[in-house]
Image (cartoon, rainbow, N blue to C red; front, side, top):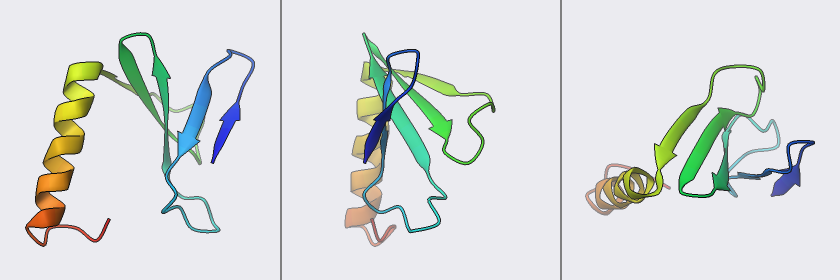
Amino acid sequence: MSNENPSGRFWRRSSFSGADAHCVEVAFVREAVIVRDSQNLSAPRVVFSAERWRAFLDALAGAAGEGGGEG
């Protein structure tokens, strides 16, 4: 799922989000990835460089392969 806001950013929500939509959303901008709380859009956001985001995803994939996650 994705949406656009007035800033022009496209926010993507995980396909694993339930009907209550308690999840994080990400937006890809230039060389960075912005992460926000989908239930509190005015809360502070976390910004990752593209390199750090890839390392984060790789770590999650490794943890899931070791029985550390369900997805």
